[in-house]
Image 1 (cartoon, rainbow, N blue to C red):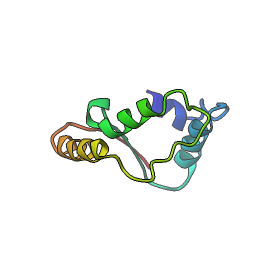
Image 2 (image 1 turned 90 degrees about the horizontal axis):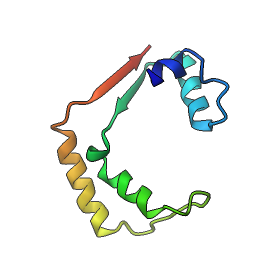
Image 3 (image 1 turned 90 degrees about the vertical axis):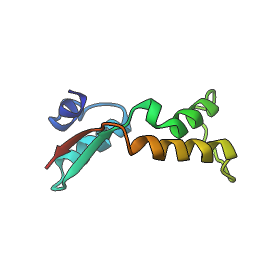
Image 4 (image 1 turned 120 degrees about the vertical axis):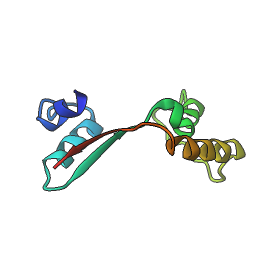
Amino acid sequence: MLIDTICNGFASISNIAEVQLIHEWCNKNWKVKFRHVLRESNKVVDCLAKAAIGKLNQVVLFPILPQYVIRLLEEDTHDSLYEKNIVFIRS
């Protein structure tokens, strides 16, 4: 439903830059694929987002990838092979 709302233009006046960008991509002559990834299958992003709490208006850099992130990345890769993904295709 959210993807349909964005693609149909109801979100084109949004103040959120990411929503506007998705709307623009949907209106190009491209084949766009949206894939919902469950939080449980995206542990790296969830972990890094928690590490950046309180730094919302700052760029957080990790010059060296922490070992725990590598482990989570391996788990995410394994989990993504076995989960059922929801894919939205708009052409």
